[in-house]
Length: 129
Image 1 (cartoon, rainbow, N blue to C red):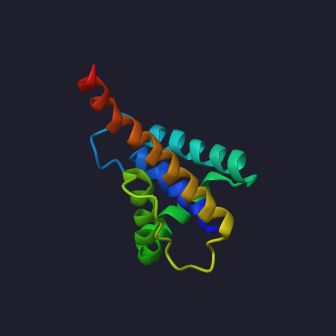
Image 2: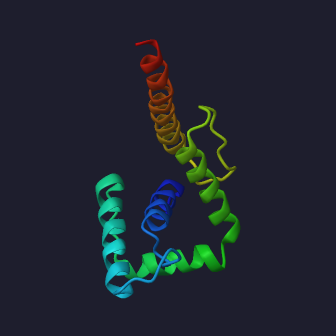
């Protein structure tokens, strides 16, 4: 599985709180099944990959338990994209990272940076009026 696909999956799992760290949920198994469906749909829509839920569950457990270095690198990439502090991209050294995936991350960071500039500009406009 390509690095961009793994980054996409981890992003969905983290945003949806797949591990249930942020609260007791009434139906955790139903919730996890819905999150996994989102992951499957995202992979098919964005990458054309058809994958069943069981291998994806195994991938998540492997990342968290066995491949912790890769998991940390992915979290750093996601943190970099979500904070949008600078436009420079620090991409982890990995043979799976392609120029296409790097371009996607750069595009997202530039998009976030532009939004951040707009947000910073709003208070200035209000003070001038």
